[in-house]
Image 1 (cartoon, rainbow, N blue to C red):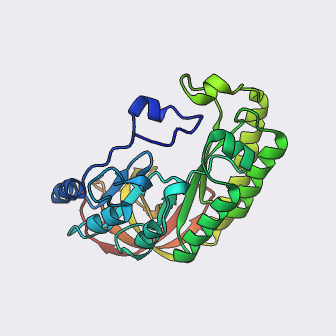
Image 2: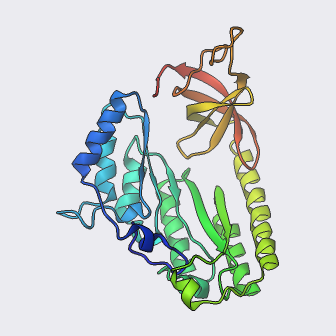
Length: 301
């Protein structure tokens, strides 16, 4: 659930208020998954950063991350999704310092103009968002940072949209999930705000942001060529293994994923769930290409 009640969102009405599972219960579940061969888990919540406020003693997400980080044989820990208002200094420090917690944060901003943010009831300003991003990147220089943005929110002017463009240009996200506003019956926006931005203008704004983000991602990814990373191999596509770095960047391996018998492995022996050391050899706005340097046989269910 969620307690935020953003004006565009139906989640609090459909799923109710936030409810946290006890740390001990979650640790036991992770331990069970590890016994089944799982190497990576994601702690999932509509607003996971507010974890624990409803539990006895009010533990927070930093406490949960620390506990799961201590589970034997778990290799990677991720979490989704964050709200800027609840991304505390303790959470940032936990992600930066815990060895199994991946340096990746999805931090939805939704808009770059303060008046639009207020109409969305997001509870922060663009200046506060910039400050938060700065603190995150200071603690984790190589962090993967993604966001969500809505274009064409009721009342959003062309000038206000340009504030969003400016924010994306300045923050330089690794990925931006863009949505054109559409009315969700039952939300505050559907009852109180007129959907007054023409559909054609919404499409134009979507394209402007998408084109900008593709240019940013192409440049960011190109700068990674020649760098070394560990990827956890997740599957195969078009004859190549693929996996993700700790910062959640998608990497395709150069080599074929099937041997002469058709077995699902490369000539060099890769298998699902393996963690491999790779050097990045190529880049596009959407993914990277890598060459494996070493193989470690870590099976995953």
